[in-house]
Structure formats: structure tokens, C-alpha cells
Amino acid sequence: MAFCGNCGTQVGDDADFCPNCGQKLKGEMEQPAEQAAPVQEQPAEQAAPVQEQPAEQETPVQEQPAEQETPVQEQPAEQAAPVQGQPQQGQFQGQPQQGQFQGQPQQARPPKKPFKMTKQLWALLIAVIAVVVVAIVALVVVKNQKKKVNINDYISVEYNGYETAGTAYVDFDETGFSEAVIKAQGKKLKNVKSLDDLDWSDLTDLMGSSNWDLIDSITFDVKPDSDLSNGDVVTVTASWNEDYEKKAGVKILSKEQEFTVEGLEEVKEVDPFEDIEVTFSGTPPYVYPNWTNNSDDDYLRYLWFNFEDYDSLDVGDTVTLTVDESEENALANGYKFTQTSKEYIVSGVDSYVTSAADISADNLDSMKNEATDVLDAYFANNNSYIGNSGFSYEGSYYLVAKNSDTWGDTNVLYLVFSTTVTSAENAFEPTVVYFPVKYTNIMALSDGSQSFNTYGDIEGYTDLEYDDGWYNVDGYTDGAQMFNDLVVTQKVDYTYEVTDNLTQFGN
Image (cartoon, rainbow, N blue to C red; front, side, top):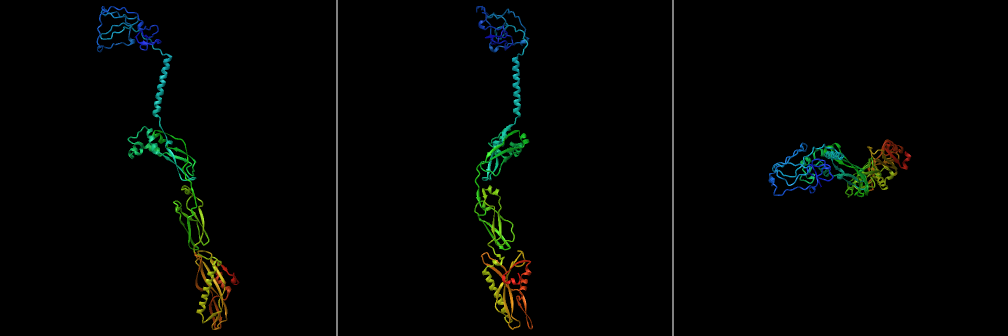
């Protein structure tokens, strides 16, 4: 161990300079005290005692700066008390001040040499400067760096609907995201665990307009978001207004996320017309269809249906009923329709008979019987003047209106009978007369029966000549005239049928 010869500071054996005073040490190192030259000590009885002051009365030694010190060649004071040892060569021997600690005298310090920067010191200085610069830059970066919030942590996807028709939508935890933004801004929730616990006033103050604007600007793009099945993959991308992001002082992190569709139920295949009852009302050509939904299914019972356009419906015609529900909506409710429209045949209403062949045999017999009753009544009312030889059925004319909106009768049936008319007073010669009896609006009723209208009308008018003049009777003596009056004059508005026996008069 060595000591500085200038200031007495303990230094390392390999040190070139004193760390305290900068004195060059090589060749000037003090030897350890144990190797110092022995001091010629005087006997204790010859030594004048040194009066020491108590430590609390000591005053500090005022040392002059090293650069101002000059070597002092001090002489031993005449009055100085002998010391216990002689000073070592090179040590400063000073006069101790009263009250000061009297230590080892030191040699006067030589002039201080100019400071020289070594390569090691330059490297150390540069390293220190670099560390300081890096620290300052890091401090600035940290201070100005925006705190980051990952929006993906607050995004989940929910699924609605049924297999093949599912929909996806983003469930955004707005509260959690808002709390993360506030935390990133260095704000704290006071006395509450969640933003949900704040009243509106406190929430507004804490959030600020910039946060509200940022959150309101957030949108999500889900692809695909419909017609989904279990196992499908949807992607979610978040976007927001970057100007609001800057104002909020945060950095939002986000990347496209993928989610797998799950939890969609299977659809039910149903016939929406299974419990639909279709009925018809009115009479041709004014028949109206109606539908009744008798389903007890919670979804099917509320379906609506529409008949497609129809006009002049008659028995046997068809109408089309369509369900007023898109297949997409049906699938969204878990149903798949096996059909969306269905045809129905008009039935169950009274209808006009449109062909003579459709007149039932029973109905025709009834009309014939009634016709003969009409004729019998006619002759009975004129029995004092005319008689007949009995009635013979000759055939019929059947007319059907071309236009359902005709102002006339929908159909007309003329049952033609013939007889020989005689004069009770032999006023004219026996004459064959044709008596058409008119029936209108012959109908096939919903119960399977038929009906007709008759007013006991005998069509036609003829004159029978006798000696003193003419006698007028109903009917026709000229078959061609009968065909003309009953059929030809009505061709514009009616189609007609003529039975075989009457075609001799016109067809």
C-alpha cells in the first residue's frame, strides 16, 4: 500500500496520479508507515506536554487552493514544543494552529501540471455524452408517444338465424374500449369500477368530446354477413376517423380478424299451403276467391297470401294463390318452403250453365214439364176460341252471353213445342204452330242441383186467317222466322246451340 507524497492520500500501487491532488506518483511514492525511518524519540520526561483543546473547540484548518500554494521553507519555531517524531522528507511541516489537530506535517505542494486528456478519458466522455443523448431522446419519445389500445380485444361476433340463412354482426364492448382509452390517456376512474357506474354528468366530463367522437366514428365491416352456415368463416375489419384518434391522443391497434360461424339451427321444410283453405263466393262471372289460414304454428299462422290477377271467374277456372313472404325471411325464421304458390279450381259456387249438354236430364225434364203447363194454361185461357191436338217437343235453342258483363241474361234456353191449333168455331183451318217457351239463367248450384228462371213466356206471334179476318195466337207458324227472331237477332251478344230437329229452320 502507498500514499501520495504530496497530500498523504492512500493510493493504489499501480496508480500514476493521485486521485485527490493529481500529483504524479511515480518515483515519489511514500513508503508505508511501517517502513518509515525510525524517529529519534526523546525521553518522555524531557518532552513538553502538548496542550490539546477539546474536539468541540477545534476549528477547521483553512487550506488554500492548491494552485495558490507556494513552497514554504518553514523553520522550526523557537517556542515549538518538541514533537514525537521527525518529519519525513518531502512532507509539509507546518505550524499547527491553536485548537487544530496536529497531525503529520506535509511537504509543500509543487506547482500543478496542466491536465491532459487521454484516449481513455475521451472514450469515457463520449460514452457519457451518448448515454445522456439517448436518455433525453428516449424521454422525449416516451413523453410524446401515444398510448396504444388494441380494439380487437373488445370485438366479438354474434350469429342469428338458421343454417344456410344465418347472419353475423359485431358485438362491440364499447364500455371496455372506452375504459381502455381513458386508461391510456392517464385518467383514472374515481370511486367506481366501471364507466357504467358513473352518472351522465361525470361520464361526460371524464370522456370528453374527443373520446365520444372517436367511439362514434368506429365502424365494422363483416364479410360475409348473411346466408351463413355453421363452419363458415367471416372476417371483421374495424375502421375509425383518424383525426378523432389524434385528438384523443391514443393509438388504436387493429387487424383483420377471422371468426368461425357456429350455433345456427337447422331449418324446417314446410308446405305453407298445407293449412290454407280456399273458398269461392258469388256467381259467374262475379266469383271471388277467399283464403283462410288454419295453421297453429307460431310462424306459419301469421303468413299472408295473395291471389294473382283474375277476371270473370267461372266454375272450373283456376286461380293462383301466392305466399306473401320471401324465401329469405322464411329462412331467417328457420323455415324453407317446398312451394311458394298453388293453383286452385273454382268450385263450390252457383254457376251458370254454359252448354246445353251440361243441363242435367232431371233439370231438362222439369223445364219440359213446366213448359207444357205454360202451354196448357195458355190454351185454357183461350178455350172458347182455339184448341190443340197435344204438344210435341221439337228441340231447343241455347244461347250463352259472350260477355260476362252483358246487360241481358247470362244464358237463355228456348224449349220448342209444336201442336195443331184448331178453331172452336171453325173460323180457320187447323194449323201447325211452334211454341218456344223461354227459360233464363240456368244455374248449376253448389249442392249439385240446378235451377232456372221462367216467367211463362211464350215467344212469337202469328196470325191465323179466317173468313172474316185474322185470329192472333202466340208462337210461330214459320220455322225460319222463329230461328231468325230467337237466334239470328242475338248473334252479336250470344253464342248459340241448335238441336238437330230444329236445324231444318236454320243453323
